[in-house]
Image 1: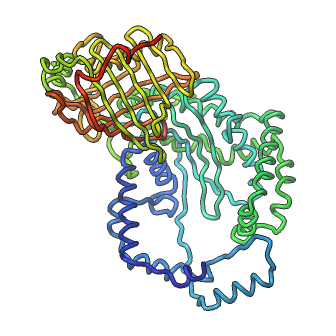
Image 2: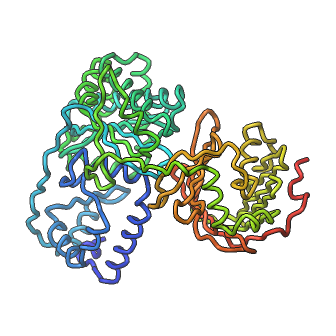
Image 3: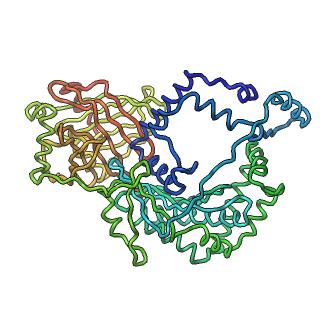
Length: 553
């Protein structure tokens, strides 16, 4: 440790590698709705000139040099600005001697005073909207800055208040937005503390169609805890959970080290953590309401929403709360205020039939496509370091067989014979229900575009930076077709499970011709926060398919 701190080696090679990794991360995060929502939220709350609000961009990273790193080290790495905490079964005198021996050559230098701008909140609550055309759900965060330090008298009451409001699965936000309404997988809140500035944040990822309703639910709960005292059972439950969390944390040696560090850096009393549980127990319902009014600023908050404007903006702009309209401002992903996004006008002559015909022409023509009786696709992906193999067989008659394997072992198998089907997972065979049968009918045909049916064009939207016609095939499926090339570039499916609804987008790319018909050889899919890409290794047309592949009994 001492050698690394006192004699660091900053090489151009390592610097270039670090820059490349950062640039790759920023590139991959361009369409990450959650990442951009958090970035804009912090920038708006603190200001982009505040250290907690600034963020990296491709431009700022390119402007860095190795000399900047060396200057940063020379400016800020100083024994006057350093703490060393050692916890363990060691002899104190021996440790002190060792530290002196290793660090005695570290020369003291003057460290500049931190110049941190003051922060402020908005005069009235507003919605700050970031249009992310690829968003399949909305990221909502109600945020306001607070002035709260760990040494303040309000620290323990605010811990209890936040635990009741949004501190876990038994908190009000979770019970309301997930358990009661089913808007999200989870809704939470957090209240920071800091010597300079911190934030109160209440957030959730919700379905597009309930974005405005979710905002109302957040405001309802925040006003409720401000205006009404919490119940005795809620208070007791929150205290018990905080007590349990504290006791459990003591099992980690790093916790003790952090306590010692915070006593020094946060100007805490020496007995701060010795009295921690006692201070928690002393919090009253009156204390909770008092700090909720002081720190949960429902009247002076930014409601930062990153989502798909074409799906959610109309209802957001019409939304009222307590008889008042909440003003809406618009920002890009760099926290720059922009004009309201405007939906592109579509030629009246465009219909599902014209879009489908252009797609059929783009992939090889109607005659070639209609001659496809079956398609076998072999693909692979890496998910969290695990290699997965996919084999999918589909027929013109609407039959489907799909197997996902890991290391040669089938993890998941689905079979549909056109009328019924089953899912095999972990050795259990589960027959399809009616909803799954209907979904399979839509997936089994490799070219549903051959029949228009009830499909309808809903508008023009952006997919990977290009315009695409959005075509609604059913209540659960929307396909997107590039307005220029005609190719299908995306599919979004909506699924319900356990009372929860989720959307699964799949982006298609790298079209290649097989026996006169073009197929996508890249399929990027997202399920919640998890994203992965299936790369197709082989596609077989009109071969290696038999009726046995679709046997259900």
